[in-house]
Length: 471
Image (cartoon, rainbow, N blue to C red):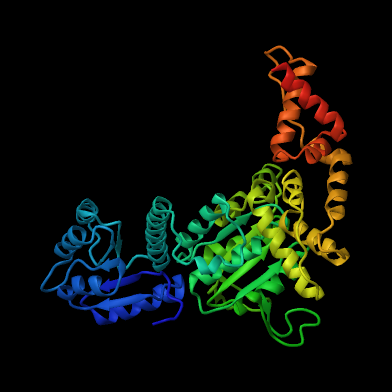
């Protein structure tokens, strides 16, 4: 059996003609990449094989000795309702086809029908079965709030519930062969997510990563598909593309939102057809890697602007993972800060300093436009300048000060604070509300609260006393 079977469940072919079983197996593998195939010539043995081999799809002939196809279909749907059945018969009879559909068959094909149509029909049912299995696994994980392989996510430092939900989703979709789109701002760790998905999938091939931003169409095609000798000027020797290198594993395309229109068409064809042509070749090669893409851009907005193809977008988002930004994972900031400071200390040959208790609170009020990557850079910068036992907060204070003085960050933070249909609150009310919020965000630390409000600590203390007296 192939070490990278597709699909994850078995496909059982039941027919009393050995020649047809052989030819159908070859067609499914060559044209559909379907290689997790079992064959059964005696319909009486089919039920035992379904029990033994984790069969998810049965391709069934109708006219067979001993146990007819219709009788076997009825038995399969009674004992294994989750197993899909496709009828492939030599009879082109509408009444027979309708009866099989009523009995629970997903589809009906005539043996002499065009092979491409048959393969596409089989792949549709495989996709349906995969999605049903994923939905079941996802429901089970959410209901029990469990991770089956938590060790896979050990490098992703978090205790955030949204991230845990992402991990559960990844475990559910890992067995699928369909594309995955990872969305999130720059610096949130999209490649770490791709690596975790690769480990979960148990594929024996490698994870091959490429940043496609800035690649023109010719370079993109050559990078992915490879070329034959003499395909273009300078092609002195044949070279395999990244798709070939990723065979049996995953191909990770980062910054997919920057792909040119011409390259988008090539990628769409690759996913749709499951095959590609190396430059200078007229013989197609089969796609044997799972496609995983990532972007920090809003692809829906790019579609509306005519910059990203809708058909490609919907092909890629069969499975979509949204990674929350660091500003929405504030409880992860102390964990990440500890980790990066220790990492920097080890690299610089220093002792990790004590972290001031005010620092995590201070950082919780920063928006982190560069996300985890920015926090890591800050930790390394602070560690490189560190001289005393207690870590200096100067590096972090400078960054927060820049954020306050940056008009762009102020503009991004603008929201409608007041309902236009209601009267405006008084300045006194607004001042009290701001003071309460600053104290909440600073965890009761007056020094930090005063810095957030842009006033001195004595002024804040005076305001707090005044408010308490008013109560």
